[in-house]
Image (cartoon, rainbow, N blue to C red; front, side, top):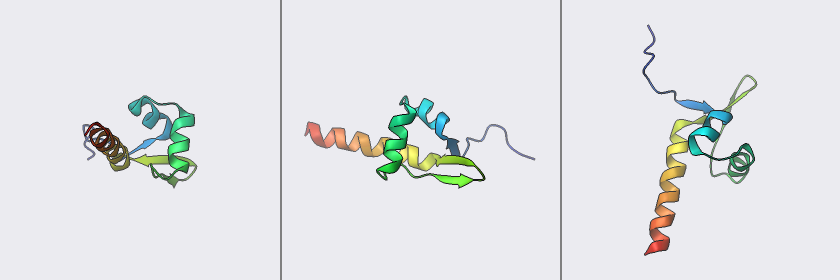
Length: 68
């Protein structure tokens, strides 16, 4: 039996955009720059949840370093 309250391990590109509050163009640029990784399942491109969290943590770290 599947637990419906478990968070997904990966998001579609559109869902990742919504979660980060950025456009599709921006997320595809981040993907092209290697800042966010993706993988394919069939024709779907998915973004690992861990990469979204790492991206945010990296950005927060950059902001803290710039303020110091």
